[in-house]
Image (cartoon, rainbow, N blue to C red; front, side, top):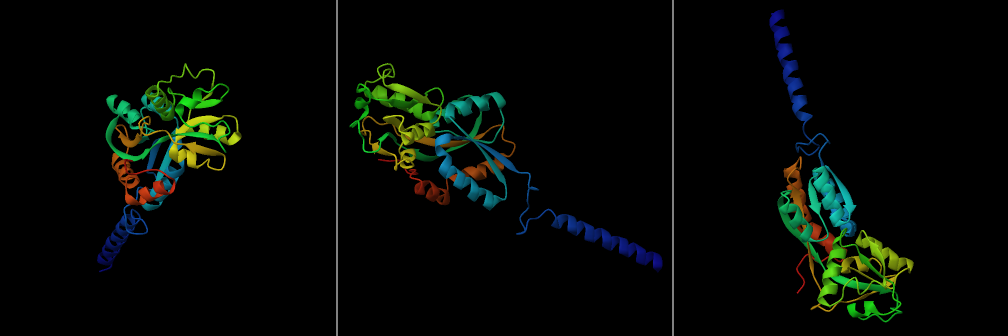
Length: 267
């Protein structure tokens, strides 16, 4: 009887241990967790940082995982991805760069997230009386543009100027600053170092205290579509897809709208 009792005790201990082991694989709400090791790397255009920081925080809270953003110019990020071939998500300042990544065989899926409109940001009060793109050629102006080889706003600015019959060469006397990111252009207006820059409309709103927006005529403008893509070498493509679903959801749309980003294509 004693031997039989010992066997029963061992069986009970084994069953208890198995239950504890299974219980340890679940989170507080009964969801299977990833042991706290799940992590996504998001390559993101620097100009999108304010709303994306909030979206990341909300997603991390919902999923119990970590999202590590790498903010820089779109072209800079694309070069980094091509060299290192690691990371999970790519969200540059224009879908053009996702197109390039897809052509290089690095994108498994993609979705549009929002749209933004280029605008001219001038010093507060518009002391140089700038009314449009052609005025950027006025003698004595200090103009700043994004570097087209580094960031989306630089490439878009060249497209805008070309539609108006202006080139960087024709602006060489006034073009005193070229940035690696759109953020740097706003900072130059804030510091009073430049008279005019071309930035995204949503970015210009952050500098309303220091500058005024001069709208670019619709026929001259180039609306940018911002896409996000899952990288083919993602180590957790399922989680990356969940992030894409989240950032294109209504909840994330409210965050983008709060920051002045358009989630519906402007007419």
